[in-house]
Length: 290
Image (tube, rainbow, N blue to C red; front, top):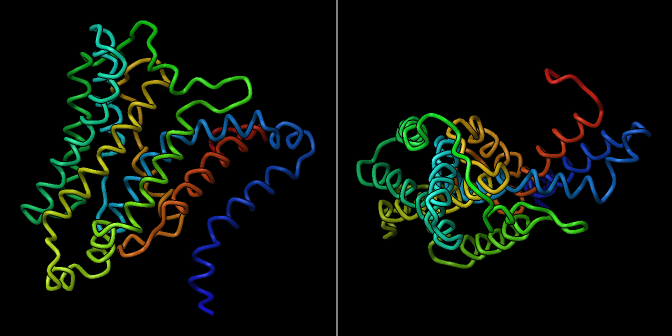
C-alpha cells in the first residue's frame, strides 16, 4: 500500500476534522458552531473561493499559476454591476460576467502559450491590468445597482443554502468529469507532469495551455458573479488577496505546485477548511490579529 498517496488523499479530510474538533472544544462555542445554521453560513462564505479554486486546480495541475484571480473577480463584478445599472437583463449579465472572465483567461493563455512566457510574470501583469480596468470602469468607486434577480444567487433560504452553493457543487462535478474523463484533462495532467514529454508525445502544448487558462477564466468570472451577488454592488477594490486563498485551497487539498497532481474534491475541502478557520476564530472571540 502506498501510504504517501493514501495520506495525500485523506489529508484534507483529516485537516477538516481537526479544525472542526478544535473549535468544538469550548462548550459555549460548540452550541452554535456545530449547528446547521452556522454550517449554512460557512458553505455560503466558501462559494467564491471554492469556484475560483476549481479553475485554479486545472491551472496548477498543468504546472501553471494564476495571480490575477482577485483582480478578475473585481473586474467582472464591476462589469456586472454596471450592466444591471444600465438595464440589462439578469441572463445577459450572468453570461457577460462569466464570459468576461473567460476572455481575460484567454489573454493569459495566449501570452503564456503563444509567447512561452512564465505564468507567474504574465498573470502578475494581468493582476494589475484587470484591477486597473475595474477601477476605470467603476470610476474608482463602488457601483451600486437596483434590486436584481442576480442578488438571489447568494441569498439563502430559511433552511437551505443559497443557489450559489448548489452551482458550485454542480461546477465541481463538471470539472471532475473534465479532468478525469476527457482527453483535455489528461493533457493537462501530462503537461504538468512533464511538458517536454507531453510535447514529444504529440500534445499541442500551446493550444492546451490557451484552453486551460480560458476555461479557468470562466470559473473566475463565475466567482466574480457570486461576489457581485453577495455584496450587491460592484467594488473595484474587492477580492484583494483572494488569489492566495485560492492557491492555498488547492494546495491544502493535496495538489502540487510543481504540477501533475491535484483533485477537485481536495480543492473544495481546502476552501472549506479556510472558511471553517475564519468562522471558528470569530466564534471563539479571538482578536483579528490572531
